[in-house]
Structures are given as C-alpha cells and as structure tokens.
Image (cartoon, rainbow over all chains, first blue to last red; front, side, top):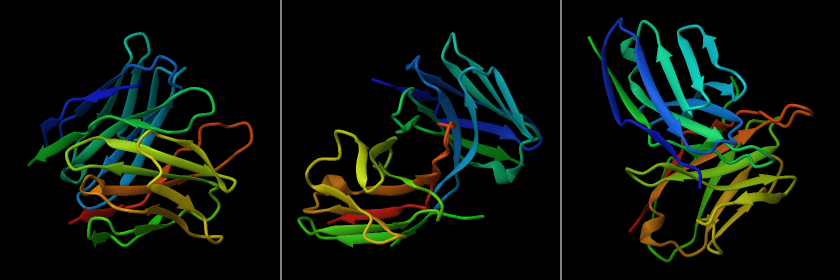
Length: 112
Length: 117
C-alpha cells in the first residue's frame, strides 16, 4: 500500500531556510500536499503540487518534486519563530479516490 | 476565511458507551471526511462521504462506526460501543466539488480529542 515517510525533527536558526523532506511510494500519486499543525490546532493546508510539476513557489514557501525518486520537499525561506510547528506531507492517489495518506510529520523548531 | 468547526474539543467517555462527534463543514463544500490520529502515530483516513452516502472507507471504519449528515450543516461520526483503542484525535475535513478540476484540497477542523476510560 501507499506509504509516506518524513524525518521526525528539524531545528533551524531564525532567519535561516528550513528544508523539510518527504518520500512516498505510490507512483500513481496525483497531488501532494503540505499541511501545518500548530499546538492544539488542526491541519492547516499550506500548499500543494500536481505530479506533473517540478516546482511551485508561494511567497516564502517552495515545493520541489522529484517524481523519479518520489521525493518531495518544502523549503521555508527566512524561517521565523511563528513557523515552529509540525509539518505533514500527504499524498492523494490517482483515480477517483480522495483519501489522503499522511507522513508522520516533521517537528520544526526555530531557535532565536 | 471559512472554517471547518468540530465539537466538542475534548470528549471523555466510558468504554462501551456510544459517542457522537460533530462537525460543521465549510458551507459550499460537498465532500466530507473523517480522519483520526492516535497519539504518536500518523493521521489515518477513516471515511469520505458525498451525496448522502459513503464514498470510500478504510479498514479501520468497521461496523462500530457510522457517519451521517442529519441536516444541511452537520456531519457526524458515531462510534457505537467505544473501545480503549478508539482513543485518538478525530479530524473532520471538507472539500469542494468543481467540474473538471479533481484537485480540491481538503480543509481540516481543529479536531476532537476522544479519551476512552
């Protein structure tokens, strides 16, 4: 079945860039998403990328997709303390199915 | 910005009791979902619902679970006879339907923490 993997922790200094990585197994995935979860809150959709794209930029966020290696990354430029949260990668398979398969989440800690 | 709202934020229930978790999806959304996250584990898909019927369900969604849209705004998840292992955070989500565009991102609520004693 589908599987999505992420590293569990990442620490960066305020002002640096953060890169959160994700790998997935389902080669038929059509859409890949990044969600952010702050403490006590739900899953906030950050951005997504369609599988026929290599890159998508949205303000401080850049998503890179290497479909051959099934590798997805989220780069946050000029990371701020407010970016500290858990970041989830999720994939949606092809066809009519809509259920998302999530990674375990990466806890990003931004140090002053 | 429109939000998915879930109530209650925390539910404590005795094992074997029935529990109903409530969700109000975003008003123009027509596709609804439930996911759960057991502490320390991944967010897992339970069920999706469209046009007043279940569209997809996972292996987790057995006969103990049911979903309902009792009126034009609420979407509920019922667990008939709760077990200790049902303790988890339950997330509701909703998405639009747009003709010709199959990617409609799912928007999530803040979740209901269910604790079974």
